[in-house]
Amino acid sequence: MDLDALRALIVADSATRGQPISKLGYFCAPFRPATGPFADKVIKVYRGLNDDAALDRLARCHDDYAAALRTAGVPLPVTEFLLLPVEGRRVPVIVQEALPSETMMRPLMQSGSRAQTIEMMESAGDVIATFWNNADQFHTRIGFHPSIRNFAIVDGRAVFFDTFPPLIHYSREEMGKMLLQFSDKALMRWVGPFLQKKVTGIQDEWYSPAETLVGLVGSACRLRPDDAGAYLEWGRDFTRRRMTRWEDEALLGMVEPPRLPGYWTGFRKLLGLQGEPNL
Image (cartoon, rainbow, N blue to C red; front, top):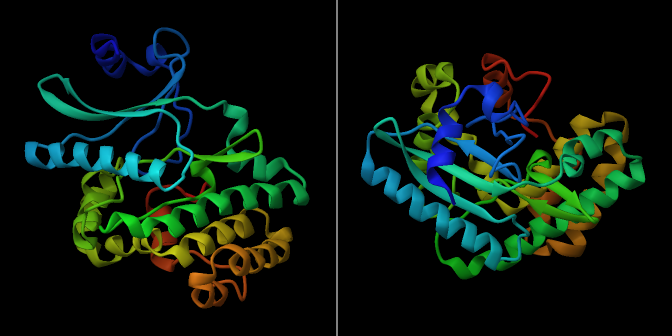
């Protein structure tokens, strides 16, 4: 990898490096260069820290997390984490093999027929169930954030591509602080410490097998409310087929269309994300 070219791309203006491919991100706005050696990559640049030990730990945890996802059977594009020296400080950067824009699950869910969207839900659900049924082997705190917008559908198969923050090894309290440290929104970093308990709670569904599935169903229901009944029916059936270990909790969460917690919708409005929810 040409690190000098990558460094130049990161410090270049947006017209040179390419427009963001998504503005929905909480931690950064990923971009894909239109030309050059990284034209087949998505680049994600995160806030740096002044704590070298914390950055080194972040790099180790990311490598462990990507390896764990693959070991657990999660399809993941080639993904590399770097601590790139930029203007005197090390900046966390992820360089990931780009997936075709037309494979992103969120817009496909918006444009597809009901039957097509249920097929996509089945593909994403398969990844969720496969991960959690294989996660016991890691013997460490590990989570998963399988939201609709963190999947692509490639040849009928769901591919997951979100590896930040690395949901492995960190305690609940540590992850709660990371949600503020690495937020791309200055307002969140300013207001968040006063609401640390609420911010920390954002992560809880990522560490709950039942809640990750319920979250997927809830996202689909909010995206296409007219089809909510069909998605609830699919979610309950999928639970009984593939996630029986967590059946009671998951079914309880799908009695009616799941809703986002009030504090998270409040944060979204505060950050100007209303209308484009982090599904």
